[in-house]
Length: 137
Image 1: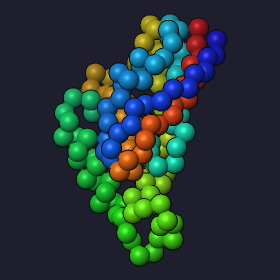
Image 2: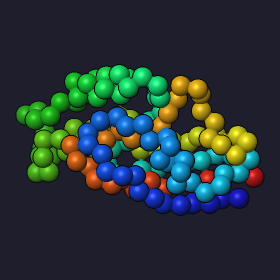
Image 3: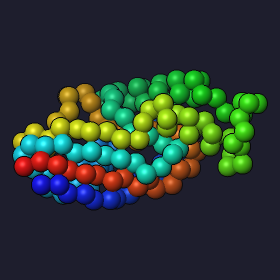
Image 4: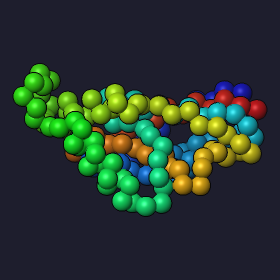
């Protein structure tokens, strides 16, 4: 069985946002075993797996990324869409736009302290489109 759906995540400001519940609520009934592949259809955000309990992790990740890839660098050529745009593209490339997760007993199988993050790298990125491809039996 292969199913594919597309849905939007609600708009968020810049930061690392725990979206596990929002994604799971959009998915159809999952097979007993299989895989779910999540792909975000944008070049200025990303998907990641990380700590789901302590919100300090999310704010620290934002600080780390903003320090690694700074705004308004004089060597940027792509500057017409605002100071946050080129850094957002670079951060998206560094992090990645897709995840593949196991499905076990009809549920996404992650560790106790793992959650799915939407890594929003624009100040106002808008609603983000996700394609979920579900494979299993």
